[in-house]
Length: 350
Image 1 (tube, rainbow, N blue to C red):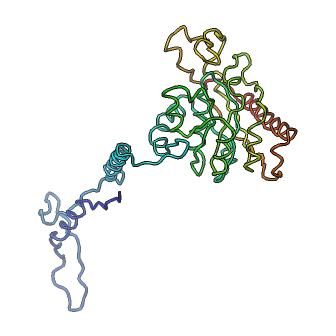
Image 2 (tube, rainbow, N blue to C red):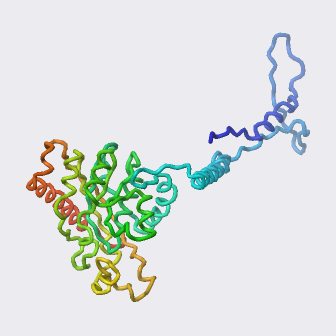
């Protein structure tokens, strides 16, 4: 919708007042021929006031620029919201082959997550300049926190802090896509199954892909093992990056370990429910739904220097020794950064 140019009515009134204003009287009587007229403002005598015609007309003050544009900005937002609803109701929007709905993610989902990111966890982001402005890249991060909130916070961190506002496509476990409501939301937000085929297709399309190789071993580890990285699987993410020739960007997240301090695991109940673990924390399940509220810890997310893979030959993706070495290099870089951030942190909550 094109913005209409608004002409304040005050301008018309000011011009009208200037046209109708009577000329000021000259002091000093007549003047010589050819002599320029000198107009002087008549000063009132003590105890007298100027006639009404001689009182200078004060131009009406203009309202501040932000006040004049406030209504326009509000109208623009309302019009944008109505246009968004119309497109949703008529089906006039696009989703990709993975079910990713960029408009819904930007307008709704990210807006719901952003207050938690900014106000509750107060996430501080470092090293975002290490993420390329375009082209595929694989971000590899540690995983923790009992519930996978770290992936969502990393998604907002990349989008809101990167100069190109890039969207992060996360690789999630199959359990995510088995839950009724979570499945649909994850697809709409751009997440897909953590398999080599989907990851390679996204990277070849130039997407930014995020993976947390620790999986449930990292997110469900006890509080006593916090910030100690678990095994990174068999290095499948390295093989995917080598085949696509995209850089690997290590990412270290501090703050997620303390949101749900897991002091126990009800394994029998977890098997009955089909979960990989059933956490027991100081507040859950003792306080019921209130115990599911995460603690307001202070987060730091740091993106490390990228590890390039485009210099390796195509057959390098099938070399198990090379995959082991690159996997260990990524893991060590993340672990070292975690220790460094923990030393710099003065408080868990502030």
